[in-house]
Length: 109
Image (cartoon, rainbow, N blue to C red; front, side):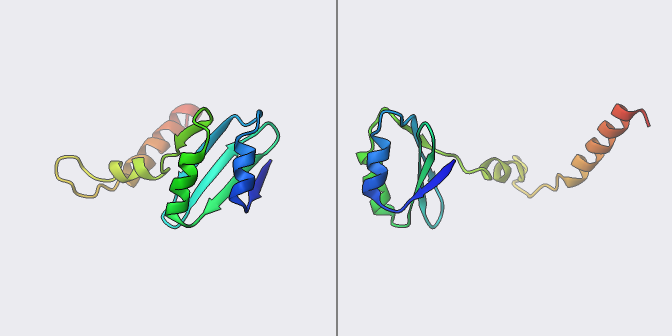
């Protein structure tokens, strides 16, 4: 179950508990989210100040920090451009074709 924490002190206490398994850090353009997984809850702290976020990252116990979460869209950005010409590639017609082919081959139509 998720819970949001508003105070940095409370988050540090939760991160130092015995049942804290991991701390994941999600960097967004306008904020940084720290997520600590405990036995019952996933506690989240949202910080908008980048300097405070860096200080908090350094003060976390090293045995629970798992690192930064990757951007979910990062692999799409790389795939949408041709490697040789660096032009944008439209992959949607190919996806539709392959999906139709798969659907017809599975159902025997």
